[in-house]
Amino acid sequence: MVNAGKQLITGLGVLLLLAVLSTSCYAMDYPDEVELDSLADLYEPVVFDHAMHVDVTENCSECHHHTTGTGVANEYCAKCHTGDVEMDVVACQDCHSADPVSIENLRNPQPGYSYHNDQPSLKAAYHLKCLGCHQNVDGPTGCEDCHAKTEAGDKFYRSGEFAPKEPAHSSAH
Amino acid sequence: MSKITRRKFLAGSAAGGAAMMMTPAKKAFAAGSFEGFPDGMGVLVDLTRCVGCRTCEAACNVEQKLPEPALPFDDTSVFDEMHHGQKRRTTDKAYTIVNRYEPKSADEPLYRKIQCNHCNEPACLTSCFVNAYKKTPEGAVIYNSKVCVGCRNCMIACPFHIPAYTYSSVLNPVIKKCIFCYDTRLKEGRPPACVESCPQQVMTFGKRKDLMVIAHERIKKNPGKYVDHVYGEKEVGGTGWFYLSNVPFEEAGFDVNLPKKPIIDNVKDFLAIVPMVLTIWPALFTGFHLLATKGKSHGHGDDNSHDKQEGH
Image 1 (spheres, one colour):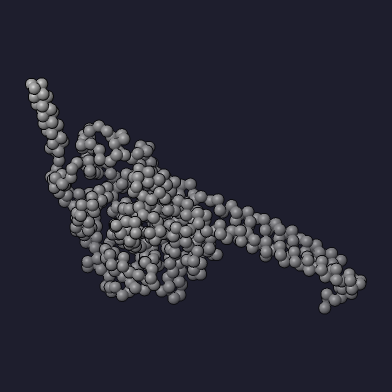
Image 2 (cartoon, one colour; image 1 turned 90 degrees about the horizontal axis):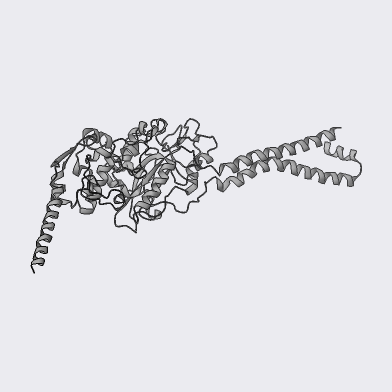
């Protein structure tokens, strides 16, 4: 009986420790808000509510792959990235280049791994990750639901004050 | 004396004709084995990523200095447009367009960007009798509007219905199509404007042979996501732009009945015969004719009377 009691207490203790450990992963330092502005041009910067997204996601690795030390969501990545090691780089732009096919990169290709050879650009990393999830959870999916068009954007898309003067009928040729 | 000279002439022309036949025939057969320039660039298009934002259309319009569109580029009502029962096509004012499809085997609509696929062995190039088209070592299929006579053979030849015609131009109507942004970007090694503008990286730019490896890896790394086919790897001898899809390609409006061989293969046997017909046949049949008439003249009697008859 005593033995069983001891085992129960030890078991509970281990569970408690695990619980503390797992929440401590979530309790690590992270910004509540991130302004995604490095690519802003046709659209205004996005003020990303990071704290809210931490609340609604089950695991940091849903967005941060294996870099936050919370395990690996993707089976394929898990073949190498097994350890729950927190890395120095966690921001999207630390790995995803804004201009992956620049002339310099094309002329002097990096030897690189054969595994990270299909990495999306920063712009695509944001959109694929955000929109990919939003489509599944019925989050906002319209362009201007996340970022308003700038004047340059209106000019580019010929919308707003730059809209074509004669609408509709000329399109049906 | 005059008789011998004529015979020599006929024999010479027959030999010359045979020699002429050999050379072009060899060239025509060699054309079928071309598999694209080794360092030619290409674009891998992943249809599962496209959300139909039409940013590529706007980028193309700006880069190629095309005329103002009928509707803003953020207007999605264009997806409902039908022209003569067909979805939108590329025009002389829009070298790329995005269409929406409703595939049977998926719940979500599918968006597909359409532009020139920059074939390894372009049918447009083969069909052009003024040699206006050129496949550059960088991978683009470009054309010279200055020599275009507006015959529209390429419009009929293209298996993807891409070249468009400036019907609105009264004096000098010419062909217009996507040139892979050759003049302003590709020549310098930069990706075309549409590729760079895409928020979802639907299109990945790189060397065609490297991208083909990535395409097959994507299929392998995401079991069940894609149909196991890269459209454009083999179609019409291989295209510079090729596609991955989560639904069968026919449901995304692709022509899945295209041959694996370049379009020129359909006609090269015939084309090889043309020089033979034009050069050998006249000589050959003249020879037959002469033999036949020679026999007849022998029947008539002496050669002198025959020569007199011919002289009439």
